[in-house]
Length: 119
Length: 119
Image 1 (cartoon, each protein chain N blue to C red):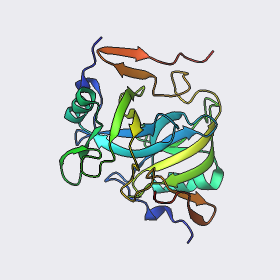
Image 2: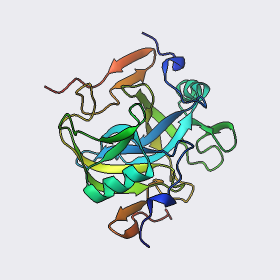
Image 3: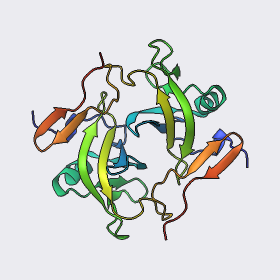
C-alpha cells in the first residue's frame, strides 16, 4: 500500500509533531512540526523539511546554517498523529549550537544544563 | 533556580508535547501530552502522567495495563515548548502491545511494520 501523507492525522492547524532522532546514537535531537506538503518534500528530497509556525513557511533544516538533517527513515505512530524522523544530523541540531535541543534537565529543585554548545 | 511548570510554553489548550524515551535502549516509545498539573504530578510521583485529550483527564501511564513508565529524568527544549521524558518502561509502551508506538516505517512506496506485538 503506497503511503499518502493525507492519511496522517493533523491538528486543527494542519500540522503533525515530528521527533528527530539521530540514527547513530539514538539521541533525541528536537521536536518540530510538518504539514502534509512538508512530509511529501521530506520523503521526496531526503532533506528533513519542517513547517515553521513562526514564519509560516517551509523550513529545510540546516538550509542556512548548514546543519542539515538527512532522512534515514520516517515512521509514524499507532494513532497516525506523530512522526519519528530517524536522521543523520550534520553538526548541532539546536540553534544554540548544542547537539540536541533537550539540554536542560530537571533534577529535584535544580535545572541542570547537561550539554554544552559544540566548539 | 527551582523549576516551576508554569515556566513552560503550553499550546492554546494548555498542553505541551512529551516524547517518552527508554533509558536503557534509547528507543523512542511514544508521544503524548501533559498540562502543567500533569508535569507536577509526574515530577512528584515519578510515575509518568499524561493528560488524555480524548478523556480530558489525567492518564497515569500503565495504571490499568500495568505497563508503567518510571521517570528517570525530565528534560525540556530550547523553546520550552516540548518535553523529553527519559523513562524505564515496564512492558510495551503501545496499546497495540508493541514496545514502541512508532512501529510503521515508510520505505519508498511500502509501509513496513518494523515491530511485532510482544508475547
